[in-house]
Every structure is written in structure tokens, then in C-alpha cells.
Image 1 (cartoon, rainbow, N blue to C red):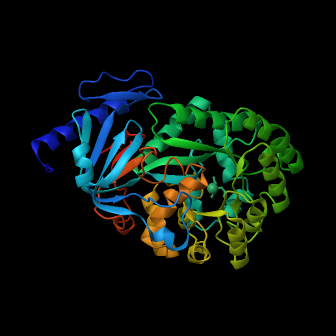
Image 2 (cartoon, rainbow, N blue to C red):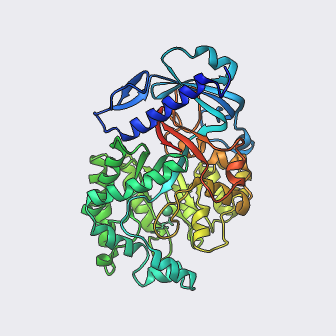
Image 3 (cartoon, protein in one colour):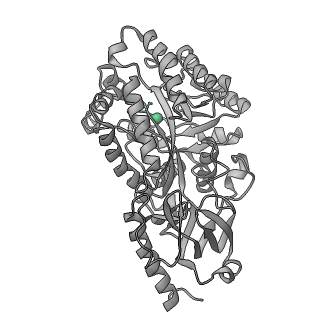
Length: 465
Ligand code: NIG
Ligand code: FE
């Protein structure tokens, strides 16, 4: 069987039709089969019963130990040249060389010819703030003219201005706005995001955001997967400025118990920074979340060495995020406590700073680094993981293969999803991307564009060029 033959062209046409069909279908109302030979319903979503991906120049599987990768392991991508993959329903059945997979292709099997392109797991973006109203393009222009992010925050702009816009929006508005960003993530090859609340800062508005995230995750049109995080401690809201202890009490006594009871967030995060939440306050809030069974994350040392990394180590959080100012002592503490650093170079870039986190020192110390976008309307208005890969290599000297591990398998483990996603291995969810390049290094090398050609979430077409 050769690519370009009539059989492959027919298979490709069938897949294109299935992409159009399934993308247009609504939950519980899959369109009729006809152009798709065999569909099964998984959680109300139509997926081909059997799907073979063949002719992959590189099938980057990330197969390896069932844990986040460290040190030299970060460079081991387990690549199969001229690889192929068999998907049954929403799961990966088998990966291997073309000769191993092709004999398994039967009459009901859809065949997707990757045309000699790169195939790899979907990106897992482990730090995003994707539910908000409005933009901050006005502040962007001000920052270009010289005002700093912190100066804008101090006069009531920044996060507070997005809070005002988000409070004024309905849950339906927020879902519609976020659906557009979901399409941006998918178009870039991202199949799972961690999604923080944090632009509500009241019981009602934080619940509104977390419920919007829940709806997005359940929506049949929105193929992206969401892992919800409660970030009510993103800022002290205006109405509590003169009595911040009362806001902390509200977080601990009302919001955290309610959100955990309603199972609206898996993780809890705090913005630990000068003029935001102190180390002592962050400790108090995260300790309360822990008693409710939430996993912990922390915005740490972003603008100053404020003790965030050390606090993350003390509490044994899953991740410590940002770390632009973390020193050798902080890195040592993270290592001793097995905390994963989540590095966010796009926010450094977008703020016009040159202060990137010490990624090389962290890798050398044996930390299981993660790279993410930090998508948000203020410090990082990008959904692009290829941009993050480029910045990681050029600005932080992270090798292309280390960066690939950081945005797939390590990111998945940081979200407690390492058993399901982040690598292409038998039994895992079929979340994968065919990129329109031949080599994984091209993702960062050809910078300033998205490379995804076809994106699948749980075996289902989620984006196609
Ligand atoms: O991760 N540092 C705090 N939170 C975001 C910024 C959010 C905003 O500016 O709206 C961050 O960079
Ligand atoms: Fe953030």
C-alpha cells in the first residue's frame, strides 16, 4: 500500500468528511453515518471504531517510565521512524512500525495517511487562565510606552480590570468567549489545558467561572479537555482592599469548601507575590485547600524572590509556576520536595522582560520541568505552544527534545493525568496531532506559526486543515 494510491485518497476523503461531520455534530445528536464507515459513541461523542494513522515520518511516542521525566530522560522521545498507530474508539490500541500496523487494517478501519508528517501527543498546557471577558490591549499599548505591569496593577488596572469585565459577563457569555479560545488552543495542537478561575473574586463570580469551565469540558462542540483549578487568590478584590483578612476568610471558610463540595476544581492555586498574597497568607489558603483534598499549585517568584518556591517545597505542592526570580536555594528546595516547575516564557516575552527562569539549572538539578503558555489577557495573551517551544530553546537554552517532554508527558503528570495522556502508548487516550513538518525539532525551529495539520481528541477529529 502506497500513499497517493486511490485507496489512500478515498480514505483521506472519508476522514475529511468525518472531520466536517463530527465537528458539526452536537452532543447526543451525532449526524448519520454515511461518509464514515463505522462510528461508535463514547460519552455521547462519535468516534471511528477503528482508525489507523500511517506514514508518519516520526511517530514521537514519549513511551517510557510511568512518571514525569528528569535529567537525560527528558531527551528520550521514543521516536518510531515511518511509524503507524492503531486507535480503537477513544484509545490507542497499538503503535509500531508501518509493517506492524498495516496488516491490522481491516474493512471497518478508517485510514489516515499522515503523508510523511510528524505525529505526536497533543500538547498539554498545564497553566492557563482561559475564562475572562474583554481584553487588555489598552494596557499592552501603555506597557509598550513604558508603564510597568505592576504600576498598572497598583492603580487598579491589570487583573482588577479583567475582574470588572468578567463580573459584568454572564456564564453564557463566558462560555461563548472561551469557546473561541478553545479553537485557538486546538488549532495550535493543544488537546488538554489546565484552566484557572481567578477573574471573579467573589463567591458568585468564581462559581460562575468554574461552572463555565465545567460546561466547556462537557460540551460536545468543544473538543478541548479542561482540568479546573480554583484561583480565587489571584488578587484581593477592590471591595476588600481595606480588610484583606476578610477576603482570606471568605476564601477559606466559604469558597474552598463550596467548590470542593461541588467538585468544581481539582487544584487550588494562589498568586504569591509582593502586594498580592504574602507567603503566610498563601500558606494559610493552600493548607485549607489541602484539607479538602485539592491538589496544590502556586504562582511563585514571578516578579521578585518572594519565597514562593520555598513555600511550594514546604507544602509539597504539585507545581511551582513562573519562578523567574527563584535562586539556587529555591531550586534545591523544589528538588528535595519533588515539586514540578512550570515555566512560562511567553509571559516573560509578552511583558517585554528578559528575565527568564533558570531552566538549565532546574534540569541539571533533576527537576521534572513543565512548559506552558500562561494564556491570560494581561501577561500572556497567547495559546501557542509552538511559540513556547521556540522561546524555551532560544531564551532558556532548553533542548528541543527536552521541551517536547515538558509540554507532553511531564505536563500530563503535573495535572495528575499521566496515566491517561501525554504519550502515545497502548491503553492511553488517543489525543494526538499530525503536524505539517517532518521532524519534531521543526516545531521550534520554524517559529511564529502553528504547525498542526490534523488534531484528534479521544480518537475524534477536533481540528483539520
Ligand atoms: O500568571 N501572575 C498572575 N497571574 C497571571 C497574570 C494574570 C493577568 O495579568 O491577568 C500570570 O501571569
Ligand atoms: Fe498564571
